[in-house]
Image 1 (spheres, one colour):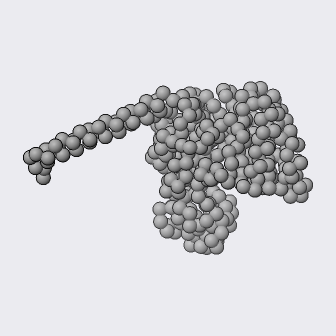
Image 2 (cartoon, rainbow, N blue to C red; image 1 turned 180 degrees about the vertical axis):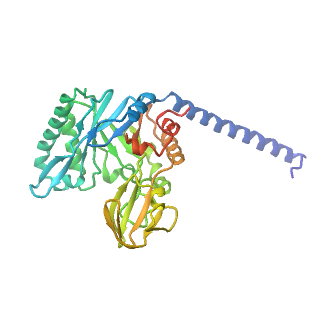
Image 3 (cartoon, rainbow, N blue to C red; image 1 turned 90 degrees about the vertical axis):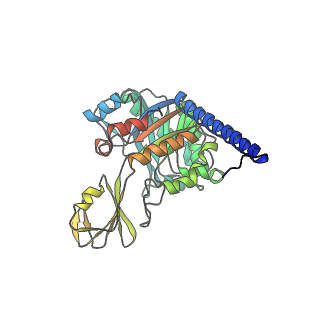
Length: 355
């Protein structure tokens, strides 16, 4: 109850005035944030992470229909060969169609390669990577405007990796971008800032997939929240890639066994040899053969995917944190089987700016 006498009325008027000003400020901040996001230049993109470039009619039509202008195209991997004790290229892409538009070659480098590599061997590795990228791009008449390096570097390999990036930038004479994990955003004192033009923030693989107690290693919003507040102060301009893929992680005797790509809950529910533990976990009730391997009784199957609502919400949350006026929002990855789990409207909402 408010008593409208003397000082009480003055206090009431003061409170009303203060609340009015506060609401006005919040409204202005919200309006400014929406205006800033609507005026931001957002480029739509997809990743292509298959060894054969041969997009289906549906995939091509989707790219054209959404006016996707950029394709991050996985060219090859670099891994460590224990026998020869040197880095070797693997999983080279093969082309059955010619890619069009703005193609950004992506090279994945395993961290164990950098662990084993001596400092003196880094220039040769940079030269070999540069030559391989240039050879593929020339063969396919792909104009090079940017190259992206994907590596989950560690404190141990940071200096070698950063030197490799600098050498690649000098040899390619192109802007270099690098993938960035959430833990590298939070712990910059330990992980450092890579010497590149831009970072591609990977909003997935946030939890330990080797741990059978993990809820969802692809994306767990509670875990991600421990890192996302650091995005706003990250000193590198950031782009954003969101996960569309899904998989089932299999464990045996509490140890990681294998991944089953594109196996969802519906598929596992229809398996008579599996018993449901909860909404995402199943356990094998007997020995059998399925999914291309020998299943043993008590093997644990955990289904992982990210819902459309979570993807849209987390994308908008990240756009509030990333301040650069131009950025790319990419989806991982261009595959009809992966895309089938999401409506066209969802995919459009993910790659288009906030209305």
